[in-house]
Image 1 (cartoon, rainbow, N blue to C red):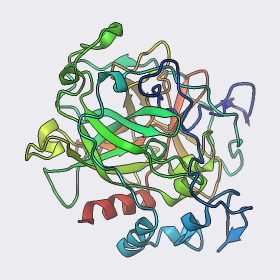
Image 2 (image 1 turned 180 degrees about the vertical axis):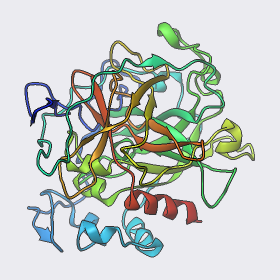
Image 3 (image 1 turned 45 degrees about the horizontal axis):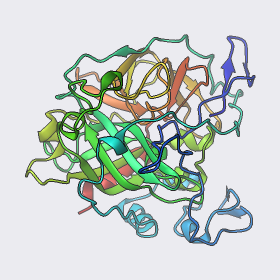
Length: 393
């Protein structure tokens, strides 16, 4: 990702860079050794790409996007905030998620972590005008989350993409339409879709309470029952922001200001219980949370050294600062945190006025020197995405 240094006086791009949007940890190909390249940001070889971006309805489009993927695009990103269920449904019908269950596809070898590939060069500088970007917060050391991980809403996402397999972190959230029986998972957009010109990932699953017992810690081999004590949950429906699908890529920029996703999942071995009932925990999403009043803690499975992707960590980041690449979009939340790649998609939590813990963001990007993380501010567009997937039969 592009790396950013922010001083108390000004914000300036220097030799460091923000971690790329693909802060997930890619696995090597099946049966092979070494480290796979990260899923490319425009991996859709069957599509015919437009020669140049152009402008549609006031939106300047990136070049190289397949024309078919632009059908149903709102006239402007502001208009997206006015979308109803029917608009999201129409958009989804043109961007179909296909994820057939391949039973027992994910085994310990395929889940095994390897070093993430190097991030792409920076593509954008933070917006420094209009007070939308603050000085970088001080680093906060990530600390291990005590075991057991069961009864907690966190876990790992695994997926296949061109070039290998990847993983991210994620959170079980409550379902407004199915209270107490949610099958919904919140993560980052770049953990489910490759972004500009690309498509949804394949073999997309959620593993709650990954490595709950610590059986695979320290380089040890562990059976699937230890890695996935609560089962492997395949995604059957996924949504992310149109901004991420149209603009997203391998390095941090304005698309990351909408880098979120929601998955609906089911157990590959049907137990008759929902994900929430199985885990025993789920958190609501707090949209439009007052950023100047919340204290945020980020959770995830960081993969890059000194971490190994097998342990759940947490950063008590306190009150978030702001980071923006486009001042017309909601500024991202930024907290000090030393977690590395692999923590992408992990939940950011805060306490609501009623005392309940809620999700307020997810890890999207971070600094190259691992001093801070940034996540999208969840407002109307994110709320609509959750409403659509919650109501969708």
